[in-house]
Image 1 (cartoon, rainbow, N blue to C red):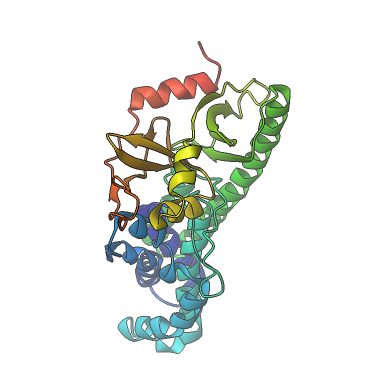
Image 2 (cartoon, rainbow, N blue to C red):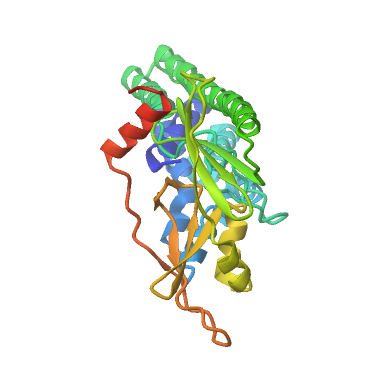
Length: 329
């Protein structure tokens, strides 16, 4: 999720766990810091653009490592805020603020390797967009009320609104399941063969959902809405570049994207260079992660990949897709 969501989630957790045992601003600050710490890995350069993408949300998001470091961070927080008599509570606060970060990231489609060192699999539910105001606003309001009131009532509102945000996450999973069932029915009705299907929300909401259908030679993109759950889904199909992938699948960088994207990728040639796109994030033809792998000549070592500047969809384009999904003319 975005940095603001992670920060206020950590603050809300800190307030909920510490309660009135320490001034609210101290527990909020400690929680916000711990909720932000895992994302500091973005400042580490792994040497190339693809490694930087696929090694984000790795060690600093591993549940085991975060658990092991929690007592030390809790001791530091207790010392800083002169509240050593509540060390156990500080341990709970720090641990929950740390691990809720990767657990929230898990709900997005990006991929979080929270099982390290046992597995490097990039887990992803994909039921919420990376920025969703309906999730973040209750947290902001709850933390704000707790800081403003600094009494039991303010802490109570923080806890209630923290619960509301958690309930919203549960609702997005249920919604995703409903959409997935509808997509399956549509694929059967339209006689569309698929090897993989991705269902994930469009930007800033959980009403309109994007569907990516993969088959051997192409991929399709469509949109559907929970407000019109039975409406037909109009898919548009594009070449996947399977022949290019088969010709260059031994390239370590291409293989890395194929693995990290769970197979939701496309390959194309442009100006003699091979481009690979992660189809999970973005919308056709504008994807967040597109990499130039160079000319990839036989017998020569692979060039370091370069991230192609992404073109974000305009607000007008997003609105047109939203209307299309709602079947509004």
